[in-house]
Length: 201
Image (cartoon, rainbow, N blue to C red; front, side):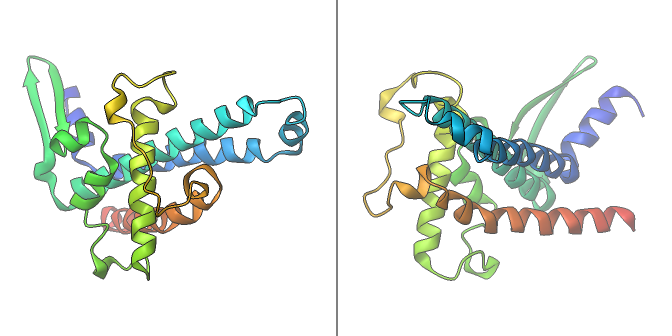
């Protein structure tokens, strides 16, 4: 198998996307562990404006967002391989998009809808209010991926996500965000395990 075939196989393999989901979540979890360490907590006394705390937490959000994006793409590649668009030019494989515009713009909410996350039969949550919370978190994490953890300002103020007043700010900026994301991570882990079992057969 040549390099082009290897590359295309990796693009089409859901396991590749699920593995990168795992790696990105691991980084975010390590950042959270660092944030809650005794050493970091003691430093908060010197961090008058909480800038260091915010920096670490925002970067954890970025990696959780990237984890979710890769997990969602893993689901979509697994069940809808036609979402992959690539082009071969000579010896190069150019990945044009995974999941069209939603994939290119890192729109986590649209990717989640495409992946069927909000379908009731998936049973991610028991109450509609929890799905509403997930929607808000996905919109927030989309901003983190696009600019929040990468640049000091957005390149377009009109595109900055603002939470609905129905959802308390603690949902995103406090640790409750972990409770909202966990069912999604569990969903990815189940699909990742099923993919692993299928590849063993």
